[in-house]
Length: 157
Image (cartoon, rainbow, N blue to C red; front, side, top):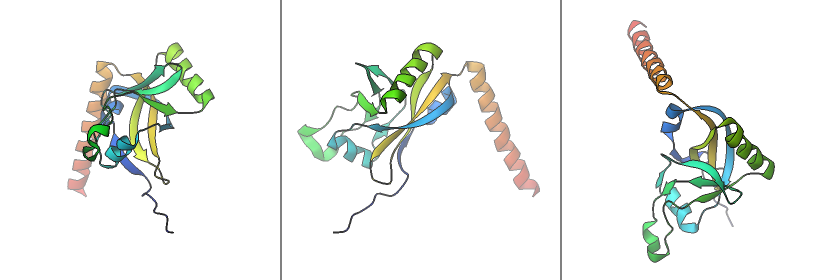
């Protein structure tokens, strides 16, 4: 019996807005508890991470406000698109994250969702500090300058 492996690094969705709105201090990988129809919807690419974050709910680390669209073939057995989904991290890591959120006023944001080599859905979380408006303007200036610099280098060389 042949075992089919999922492609490694199969990225489902990326939260591009997170790196613009936050300074990402540290990243970590977490598992995510999903229903069967949610996994099938993720494989179709029906994911929106914008405005989502991770927080504490009943002592558990939970992904809040992430939208996984409905799976069309499931009919009445479908999942709720914006339900809170439990994130799987070790107990010490969870306690450390909760402490950081309370003491240092950081936010835990999902950066991307992907399937690992074994076909298991994972979430890359970022420990983030919010940017001020002037920080965002500075980021945009740097990006524009780098783009202009690359254009000039292409023209000369």
